[in-house]
Amino acid sequence: MTVFLVTGVTGNLGTAALRSLLVHVRVADVRVLVRTERAAAEYAARGLTACVADYSDSASLDRAFAGVDRAIVVSSPVLDPSVRTAQHRRVVGAAVAAGVRHVVYTSGMGARHDPGHSAAEDALTESSVHHAILRNALYTDPFVDRALTQALASGVIQSASAGQRIATAAIGDLGDAAATASIIMPTKQLWELRGPAWNFEEMATALTASLRRQISQEEVSDEETGPFAVLFPLVRRGVFASESDGLAELLGHAPASISDVVHSLVSQLNQDQHENEGFSARKR
Ligand SMILES: NC(=O)c1ccc[n+]([C@@H]2O[C@H](COP(=O)([O-])OP(=O)(O)OC[C@H]3O[C@@H](n4cnc5c(N)ncnc54)[C@H](OP(=O)(O)O)[C@@H]3O)[C@@H](O)[C@H]2O)c1
Image 1 (cartoon, protein in one colour):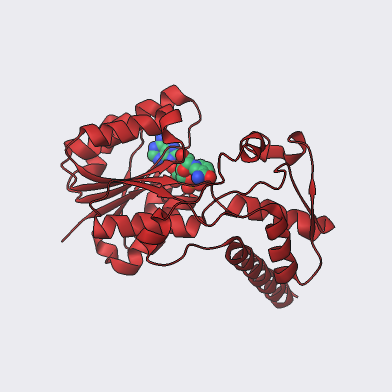
Image 2 (tube, rainbow, N blue to C red):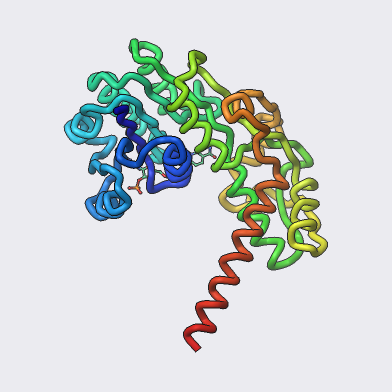
């Protein structure tokens, strides 16, 4: 029996990685690392072994990794670099000390400029553990989520991209890639995972097709893009424009395009609305 451990399973990427792993691996062979007893009970009810642990607590990590053969370690969402760096050193250190045979670490684009990702990558490369570092692109989904909200409200989506392209990746594809890397244990250790590049004109076209109404796009200031304000200056400089083959290579097929992600989120929205209408009708 090969024991797999997945961290971050209550989040976007960990959810996708776990879902994908469970397509190939028996539920009894999968352990999840969660932070609360409540979450542990929810996963246990699904047949998974759940360990309560925290990247900031070495003893809890030692318990979680004991007896694990392969691990998918999702990076910490903490923004403070000093906290995140220590967390990543701790979690990779615990995996190595426990004798885990293969570690998949979900890193990010430009990891060498990020102390947190660098700490995890260095800890893995300096160890003798077999590993795969997956430098994930920006997620496509939050861009589409925001554009879909704007499209439905006004028919106009906004960006400060100046027409520049962005090679993002769907969270589902990145989750599949992490699960695949854990299963096949590739000899290549460093992967740049990006999907096909797109621009907001293409996003508007995809929304027009999926929503069956005309959606246009307009250029606004960085400030007007809200939570994306820090990203757009980099987008305009082309920092996220270049594609790479790594994601397609790990997946064994083309990664989701902007149209695929738009279509999938619009379908999900329609399904949710349909179910809510059914629920309201049943209540009446
Ligand atoms: N590529 C991108 O565009 C992008 C965007 C955002 C973030 N990221 C990075 O990629 C990671 C995964 O993204 P995501 O969207 O899945 O993030 P997310 O939805 O915020 O999920 C983060 C996961 O990490 C867990 N976690 C938080 N602090 C922890 C700790 N101290 N010890 C153990 N587990 C902890 C959370 O558990 P709880 O439910 O208990 O909080 C949650 O399961 C992020 O953490 C961040 O480093 C990438």
